[in-house]
Length: 106
Image 1 (tube, rainbow, N blue to C red):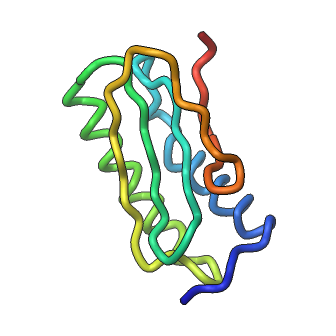
Image 2 (cartoon, rainbow, N blue to C red):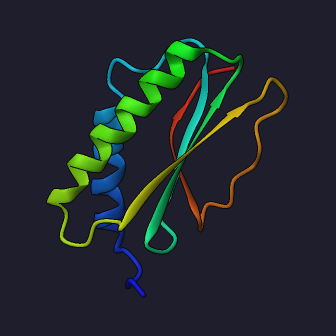
């Protein structure tokens, strides 16, 4: 099992995710968060409405992010994306597990 990440490693990965999201975020995006727990990193995207173009952009950005993290000393063995279509109140995420990298002003 993988050792837990240092705050510097988490910051580096979050910065790489932000870089991969440049030009991807549309007004439909409500929140993007990443979980570094375990060997599989999960990136969750909350969208207000279903949009095929946003899904394609998300797929591309996750691929870019997966390529960027290869330069890290201990990258994830797998990056998994989750897309939630959610018009209600956004969930409260456990800060010990999730790092929010984008939050739309609402």
